Length: 365
Ligand code: SF4
Image 1 (cartoon, rainbow, N blue to C red):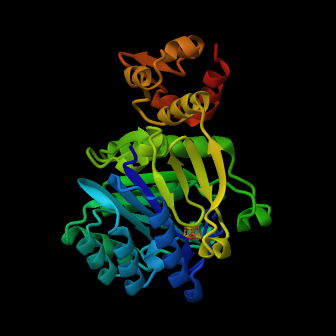
Image 2 (cartoon, helix red, strand yellow):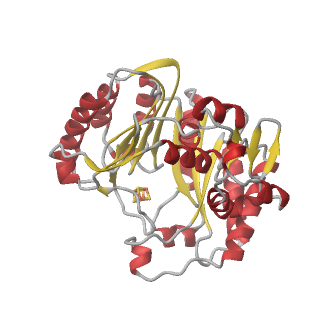
């Protein structure tokens, strides 16, 4: 049963140097046609399930003007939701006006996710982003005043020429904001981004790992629970929507470049705005057989601090996970911990989690 839905709004007022997401310049000529096509896509696929999470991501959804946002919410209103819905919208501070925040509150949005990335001037210049401290403090204060307390900030680290002192500046600012959730990303130079075209080199791997450790230590001292490799939350504010991905559950994904996991298919939508507007939504489909599903289960579950529940695994696949893979060597080396019902990667080894997961999957009996 599907309980989560992602909706992608691809428009951005500015294209950041590192960006690899499905996005386009915020051109008026596309926006209304895009919303028309989004509505048709939802109408043709959604089967009326009651949803526990809706996540509007981007792009920059807050780039839509107030009337376009109202139109978007009138489309989303067709989705049935439970009374415990987690309803998130992403945005940047520049385009999230108080009028839009009021609208969010009115339509039931109860979680906001802001792309801040950094407050340091050199970092912002490098990322080709803007941020104004006073404006950010004012908007966060306003969200809280009107009762939206579940707020995430995205932070990027390991930016070339960044030092631990610069990172400290970002953490200090985040501390001042007193928010409930932080998602962190080490800067990756993805192909076809402006950074890659400019031949930018990544920061040294040792510095990257030192920064990751620093973030983990600092955020934990501020009372955040490090519940997933890249995510930190105050108690009770863990993202339910993203947890659905890490729990390998099914979900809808609507919009340009969006991904879905429906029935036994992982589907990726087109990144071409013209095709999307013409109603040619799908780019590719991966059929998930039982073996693939087990691999996804391991790969995704091991991102969480709770790892894989052996009981849930047995219920779902009618097999014992421990009979399927050679986990013992990894446990002996301290890369995996087997405790009670759970098999998980200890936080001290999360930095090398990809290598651990590959080794586990390669040790299939
Ligand atoms: S990083 Fe976010 S805001 Fe920047 S261009 Fe990409 S989608 Fe838009």
